[in-house]
Length: 120
Image 1 (tube, rainbow, N blue to C red):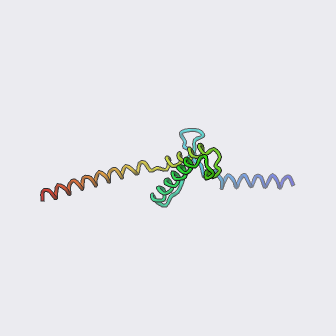
Image 2: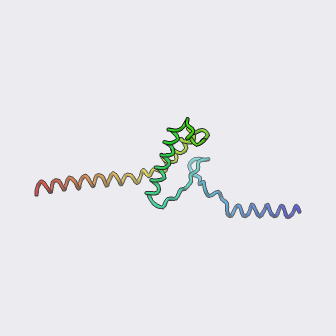
Image 3: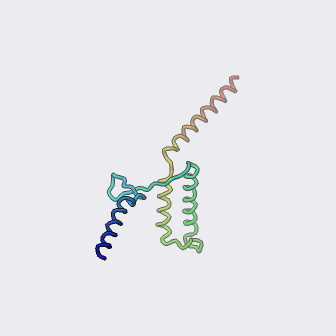
């Protein structure tokens, strides 16, 4: 009986090592005890809708903190802080640089079009 129990535990540990290597959190490598998780989105629109929804939930929490509509969230301020931290991390800041470039291009094209109309 004891031998079977020990064998079952050893098999569990062996299977755990192979299958469950805690895949949800990955070490950031630069700070012990600091981890990151990966979220998957089909496209940038889905990402932006997710960020928008996180912000909407945050606003709802702020506006309804002391009301019955607060949803019974324990420690709403701490919960709100966590949600806003996630929203900040999800913002594709590097990708927004291209939006500035597109805007500059748009302004330049408008300027060129105005010059063409006044000279032509």
